[in-house]
Image (cartoon, rainbow, N blue to C red; front, side):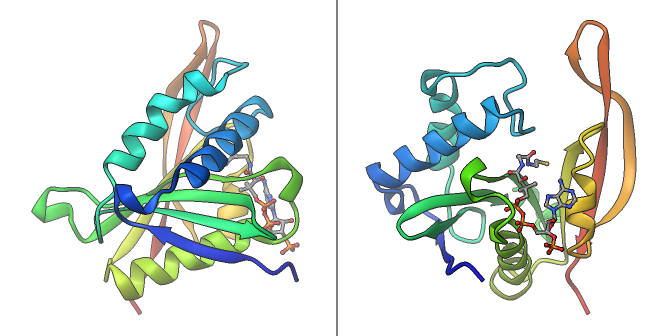
Length: 179
Ligand SMILES: CC(C)(COP(=O)(O)OP(=O)(O)OC[C@H]1O[C@@H](n2cnc3c(N)ncnc32)[C@H](O)[C@@H]1OP(=O)(O)O)[C@@H](O)C(=O)NCCC(=O)NCCS
C-alpha cells in the first residue's frame, strides 16, 4: 500500500505557492489526459486553468469549502474539492468536485484514499448528511464512485455539449453519510 499523506486546506493562506503550483500542474496534466475535471476544450495550458484555481483557493473557508490533497514522497498524487451550499436549508450536504489523481499515480490507491477521507470529513468534521457529485456520461467513472458506496440518483439527458454534435448526459451520484 502506497504511503499517502492527506491534507485539508480550508483557508486561502493554507495554500502555499509550492502547493498551488503542484495543484495547477496536476489539473493541467489530468485535463490534457482527458479527465473530466472542468476543461473539455483541449489542450489546456497553465494560464487557462489558473483562474479557476485562483477562485477555488480564494473561496476556501472552514467547514464551507475545502481542498483535500494527497502527497506521496512529497509529490502531489491527487486532490479534490469539497464545498457546501451557503443557503441555510441546503447547508446539510456537500458537493465533491474536481476529483483527480495525477496520471503517474493512477491505480495505486490514491483515489480510494481521497474518497475515504472526503466521506470521513463530511461525516465527522462537517457533520453533513450526504455528499453529491456529478460525472460526465460516457466515461464510465461512476463505477469508480460506486465502489465506495456512492449511488446514482439521476441522469440529466443532453446536459453537456462537448461539441455541436456531441451531447452527453450527466450522471448524478450521492453518498449518504448518516447511519
Ligand atoms: C477516477 C480516478 C480519480 C481514479 O483514481 P485512481 O487513483 O486511479 O484510483 P485507485 O487506484 O484508488 O483505484 C481504486 C479502485 O477503483 C478502481 N478504479 C479506478 N478507476 C476506475 C474507473 N474509472 N472505473 C471503475 N473502477 C475504477 C481501481 O481498479 C481500484 O480497484 P481495486 O481496489 O479493486 O484495485 C482517476 O482515474 C482520475 O483522476 N481520472 C481522471 C479525472 C476524472 O475523470 N475524474 C472524475 C471526475 S467526475
